[in-house]
Every structure is written in C-alpha cells, then in structure tokens.
Image (cartoon, rainbow, N blue to C red; front, side):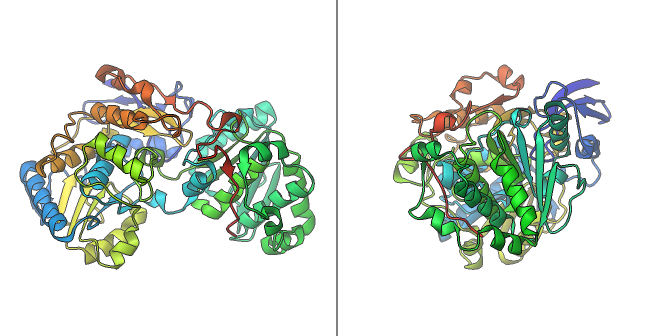
Length: 542
C-alpha cells in the first residue's frame, strides 16, 4: 500500500487528489486537502479514476500492421517511414494530433520534434480550434489568462457565462457558491437557449437566444460607455482602440436591438446592464467552448472597466481540456512556435539555436487545409481524444501512414502503427491549470506490459532519425528543465511566460514539486507585453 499525491487530470480545473494504492492495482481516491484548487473536494470524475486501473482492453505492446512487435523494431519502422516521407514531400508533410490530457513534458517533446526537426506546424488540437486564446493574444499581446482561482473569493460580482462551465467544473462551482455564502459575492449568470441545471441559484439569471451572447456583452460595453461606467483613465493610459470604436458598436448593439436579438424584454436587458455597470470587483467565468466572439467581448468589457490585473478583478477563461494550458505554454499548437514565441525571424533564430534544430517551421500551420489539399502524408496521433475521432478516422482513410499512441486502441485499431501509452493513473509529469498553476501528476501504478510515456516514444523516434544530440531525455524532469530554460532564454521581460526559477531544479525536487503559479499578477498596473505596452480593444465578432 502507498499514498500518493497527484492530480485528477480529467478536466481543466486541475484538482489535486490523494490516492491510496494496493499491490493488486486497487485504488482509493479522495480530494487533496492541501491542493489550492479543490481543497479536498472532488467530483464524480475524480472519484471514478479507479476505473482506469483495470487492464481490460489495454494496449500493452507495439503493433505494426496488426501484428505485435518489439519496441526496437517499431521505432525503427516509424523512423524509416517518416524519414522517407520527409525526404520525398518536404516540410509540412507530417502532421501531429494531440489530445488535451497529455502532460506538459509530452507536449514539449512532440512540439520540438514537429517544429524543430520535421519543419511542420501542422498540429491538430481541439483546444486550439475555438479561438478563445487567440482573442487573449490579440488583446493582451500574449495568450495569458490573468486570473487566479483565489479571485473568486475576492470578487464582488461573478459573471458566469454559458452552461459549460457549470457542468464541466462542479468543484469550481461549489467554490463559487461558497463565496456567495461567506463573502456575499453576487452571482449573475447568462446562458443561451435554455435554462441551465441549477437555474435559479444565481442572483440574476438571463437565458438568451442561441448565438446572441456576444451581442449582449457588446451592448453592455456600449451601455457602460454611454453612462460613464468605463475607466476612462485606464483606457487613456493603457489601452489602444481603433478609430471610431464606440460609434462602430452602435449599429445593432443599442439596448432595443440587443433585446430583440436575445429574445428578452427590454426591461430585463436594462436591469442586467445596470447591475453590471454598477458592479464592483468583477470576475467573469466562462469556458473556451463559448468561442472567440464571446472571449473578445469579455476581454473588451474588462479592459474598458479597468477590471484586470488586480485581485478579484479579472476575466477567468476555463478550458475543457485537462492540460490545454500546458500545451499552449510549450507551443504545441498551430499558431505558436514555442514558449509563447511567434514565427518571427528573431523567434525562429532563437529557437533554432536553443534546440539545435534540424529544420525549423517557418510559419503557422493550417492542418485541415493542408489535409484537404493532400499535402499531408503522415499523421502521429498522441492520446485518446473521443471528440476528435471523426477527424482522425477521416485522416486514417486518406493518409498513407498513421501512428497512434494510445492506452487503448479503441477508435484507431486500424492505424499502421499502435504504440502503447500510459493511462492517466500511470502518467508522471506536470500539468498547468487554467490560472497558470503548475502541479505534479505522479504515477500511481507501474507501467503495465510494454507501455511507455509518450515523450519517451517521441524521443526514441527522434534518436533513430539521427537527432540524438537534441533528444537526450532519460526522465520527465529532463524535459521540464529544458522547457523551463526555453521560456527564460533571451527573455528580457517581453514575454510573461518565464519559468526561470525552476531552471536548476534537481530530480528529487522535481519529484517533490508542490503547486506553484507563474506570472505573479499579469498586467498589474496596466502593463501589457505588446510593442507599445498597451492592450487592444478588438472590433466585436457578432
């Protein structure tokens, strides 16, 4: 029997767990009272982690063409096929799919191989498709979410948008309700289409027509401007806005047009606007599945009210994927090169030098466009991703070579190569929560059969292709240290992502790592990582 502190890893909340394991893979799970996110609470998904301990249906050995082979032969086969495709079709001919529950170390290794050695930014990740974090980058100069979990208790008003957040993050919603009871925090909820579960628990609750939430929030922004409820001093000093921005909002965003679009009485919209305009410290909670239009509208509202970069005064974007933030930090998506760097010549030169890159990606990827055009000839899919299965099956039907790294082969049984991965209870590395909190996920059980960490498989393929000097990892801590150093490399403060405090972390210290949040208070004092130091108001997408 052993007691292990780890993470649930089933959603983007980042809850800690305390696991009691037995020799026969028996497992008892409870919430970790010491973890800052959940403080001992746990929802049904966390309690159901014990189901992962079963070996029924597990992929336990590499498979090539439906036949079991050893790792050495599987790695050699993958390396040979990928090299032939790269030599014949060039950069961009190899694509990567990553699920949302990989560890940061897995994302780092995969992104490095793709962008630094295959020369490809063709990465398919569902958490990169909704555009919400691109809205943060456009407004703030970096895809950084400035809120912290403690902002919930420090707010005076919580604006909860949509029903995804309430359904996906029950522990977080319990924290919201506790803040209402203990601190008297006002809860205002807006949902689209139908009343959510628990409707009526909010102090003010609106149900608007589907697709109208961004217009409702843009109308609120215009209302705040008209009645003088914006922070004009903050706007003048710290925000750049397009010429004619306010006049551009008026068509279709006056209170009567908004009410008609939302399917609400004008009086109900006005009451909502008045409550929001007079709110004190404001935290807006919403899920990235609400899309880029809602994200832009929320960011515009917080910038205009100066409700950002201060305790209890921040937008709080949640992610439906367990480690989407970790994937974004290393750059494992189409639009970033690595560590919040873009594809500028300077960034490419820095990353090339740091990685010792063989063939650096030159521009953001467009994986679906490239797939349809027939430019992609191979795909490596890492991690089970049920939502992406239709896309993956289409890729399998059209691509000459597909590799799937999985704990179970379900949905990808006919891949050319199947590589056995850990289940969630066997993973060992780090995850980053939606508020930049880095925590350790620790292995609860030994890896069964011939299962290996995903970063290990990527490393071995890279070594077999001749890039062993750049891929010399023996443990997850090696990848963590390199990722940390890359965030700090030639970072003069222009990039907020800088994990340099952990650059010298030892293997024992990595093993004992306790949760820590990077970034202090992003945008404190109205300082943004843009060329002129100002945030940007964006024209609404309605």
